[in-house]
Image 1 (cartoon, one colour):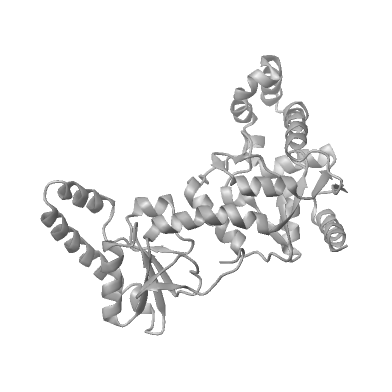
Image 2: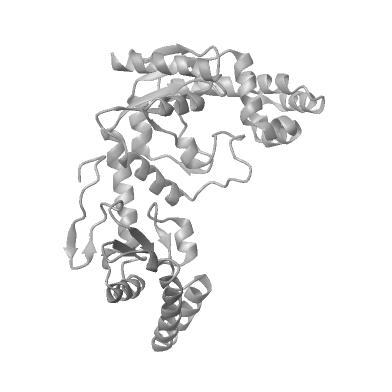
Length: 360
């Protein structure tokens, strides 16, 4: 399958297909238990488990000593759970709609859903090899697709407005891959988002591949420079390598604007600066206990702007210089962008300059 394209589904057995295209289906059903679905699933799939987590565990325990009894209770639970979904969900669809069903390996749980749906009159495909085959496909795609896309990397220290610039580029019709948005994390020790947990690694991989498959290989893709990890999530090696080889734009933003961005993007730290400093305690070997004590003093006195500026200049900026030099180094095709303002007008003007320069 060519990178970055969605092909037609390829039937390999009656009602069995290779992992390729999911967008053509009216409904994709994940027949696995809720905990399996939560770990990872095909983007857009709806979890309609034939057995819930408790029932799944019960059937598994019985299967160890009495396979017949396990299948008996498993089918009983399955038929009841499937019946519960017929009226509220399945009845919304017409016989012209086509469904895809999958479970862990494309076995019994998929067949239970597929057989009942076919009895009703729907066309149903079962994913060959189930989620395990899908997972192999995801890993392979993450190795191939990043190398087929044309990246342009926004570099710059913490708070310089890279993410805001990505949003402005997207609003202007440009192709953007926002890795921190997919990871639900802004990177670094301070990057976790209150009330918004990161996905599992496998679910992140699925979302990342799904996003990249939507991109046009003939057009530039703008992305923010990232380290190997965003929070607890690992970026694919192929993506990191492709970004490191790509042209960069080095963004320079006045400190006053960077501090204002932190106030706007990290209001929880502006409201509780002591909590922010406590999150920075693992940096003691790097910045020293005296610097941590100074930051805590600024936090206690409510000197928020001074605290933000000091954290950036004494820790994040030196880290950025080291990381960028190591991963991107001096590039003959690097360009420089002065971002004097992070307000809408300043971002719009910067976006126009970037698009114009990229078109040349």
